[in-house]
Length: 64
Image (cartoon, rainbow, N blue to C red; front, side, top):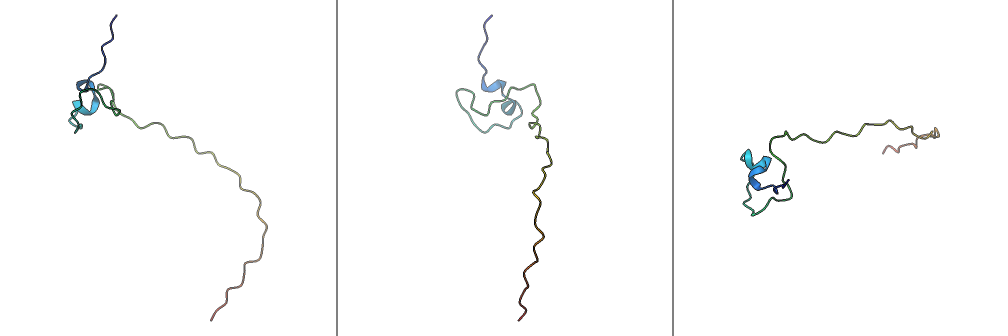
């Protein structure tokens, strides 16, 4: 079973008219056409506990 290497014509960007390049081989931004592009899932936000703070008096502000 021979696996043919991808070409620029197989790229999502080329097939949707979004490519401005004309390279001889697929560039590093190659994405296979036929699937939808989705951003990667965002990591979950994990609440963190803050250290206890000492209730220090606030400094007086000099009024001129």
